[in-house]
Length: 257
Image 1: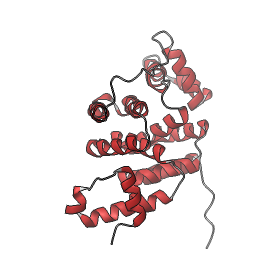
Image 2: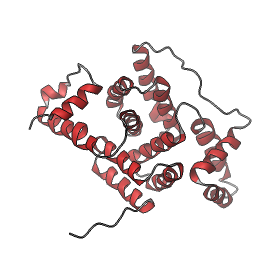
Image 3: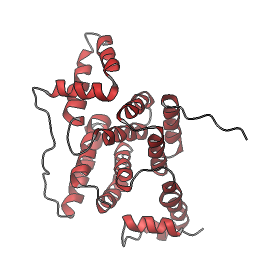
Image 4: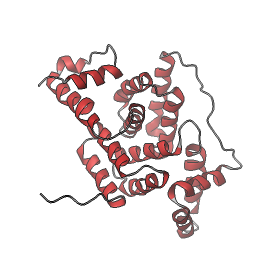
C-alpha cells in the first residue's frame, strides 16, 4: 500500500517540509493511518480545515495526547487558527478536563506560540466581572442548555449541593464560556469533542449534543465532528458518541435493500 496523492497533499499542506520519523521506522502503519486520516476521513462531512483542527486539538487535550497536540497545534496555526483561538481552546478545557490535565498543554501552547514569535500574554478575552459572572453565566447557560432545563436542575438541587449549580453558572459558564475569541457554536462543538474524547461522559455528552442542536449545530455537523476525531480517539469512543447522537438527534431509517 502506498500513501495516496490526496493524503500526501493534505498532510503536506499542514506539515510543509516535515518528514515523520514513523514514516521511516513504521512505513506500513503510516501508510494506513495517513490514507485514512488525511484522505478517506476528510472526504466525509463538511467541517472546514480550521474548525476541524480546533476540534482535534480539544480532543487531544482531553485524551492527554501532549506530543500529538504540540505537532497539531503547529499545523493549526499554519492553517490559520489564530493564537487567541488556540489559547481559548486550552482555557475552555480547564472546566471540562480539569487543570491537572490541562496544565502541561498550557505550557506547550505557550512554547509553540513563542517559537513562532507571538508575544505573550495575548489580549484579554474576559467579558465578565466578579460581580456579574454568575448572572452572565446563568444567562448563557440558559441560552445554550435551555431555560427550562437549567431552572429544573437548580430547582431539583438540594441545599447541600446547590453550590455546584452556582459553580456551573459562575465558573464553567461565567468565567470561561462567556469569553470572546470563539463564538458559541464553536465552543459547543469544542465541549462535545472534549466530552466524547474523555470517555465515560456519555450523560454529559448527551446533554451537550442537545445543546449543540439548540445553538445551530445539526446532526450532520455532529456526525462530521466524530468522523474527524475517529482516527485519533479510536472506535469505542467514536461509537459511543454515535449512540449519543442517535439518541438526541435520530437519523432517517435505513433504506431496505
